Length: 241
Length: 255
Image 1 (spheres, rainbow over the protein chains, first blue to last red):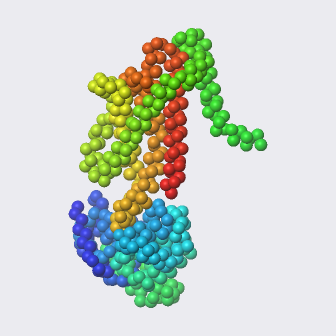
Image 2: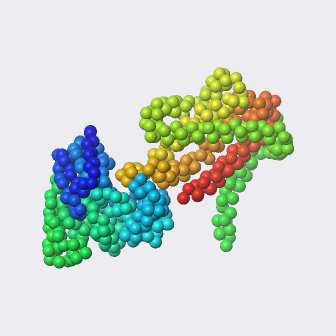
Image 3: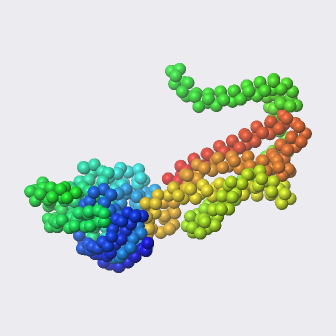
């Protein structure tokens, strides 16, 4: 199978053309095309195992595929935080080593994102000794510190309890307001989609088809998830899943 | 109170009971055979051990064997790390080496020794070469297996974020490889001691533990033979303990 990943500079759109991904005889994507608009949060809802992560991995060039993917520089917040065996500070700094050569400037930049992700007091702690929520904050700080155009998020809050998830939604919103990126977040949590999305899609499998369900114009901080509109939308999404 | 004292002494009691049992079997065997020349008593063996410990020639032999063990182990380790890392990142090297490593891993050790003794007429060098040929494939396999333990997800993350190779080595590869490899090394070092002494016996290496065992065998000095065997076990145990201590120190410092 041939891999055709074309990475364009400075484009915040994500264009997928004629994507074909198969694991043996199991075809996940066949002739799949879609363009995600720039600087918006696109949330893809789908059942477990329907191909959500495969789409992100194709965009990140982690899986072999046929077709074309055009996008800018990428950051990725993984399901597991994937932190290196070093300090919180070191985990964020490592993605900037090839970006900012001056050590003082780099340290300032790391500190800025540790502050934004509300993890600065733990900068000197060993990253893998932190709680799940704290580790995901480090992962967010790392993703935003890296000068990317596109942010991929693969069910990053899946294993966290509701209280921590809600504080992380706020942190993510804060980071996005200060550093807008085209964000593609995959999840099967309807509440997460309603809290974070500008656009919500449903992904149906075998082979995968993406259907845009709605656009939410209300800013994330002003959303009332218990308003009539939101409750109706939630019901609609739950019926589709 | 009694129970907690017993619990505290358990780590010492079980090995002591095991040693006592072995000594009992030894003594019963001695009584059964009834001859110091065929099967030495515990007392005669201990006396022989003491004589060796007081003999300067024994210490020279021990140092010579220790030198061979350390040279063989160090060269094997350096080569295994260098070639193992190369094989993982340049797959063709791994593919070329695979049959060679498989051959030496499965070849009977004594057969390798005999062939080398026939071709290399230097008894002082043969044990080291035998050691290299047997120990290198073991350490090479440990190195490649330890690299396989590295989290693929972390490697993907580093690729995506264009993390420099040096930083990847420091924060992703070494923290995984080091403890794994340090866990494997003591057992391999003990095996190297046994291997080198065996090769010294077959090669008639001058001034070596193996050479002393060979002499004791030729002159049928059974007490000396038993004494040297026990001293070799003690030597291997000391080296194993020293390496485990070093591993703990280095492993603890890895974080």
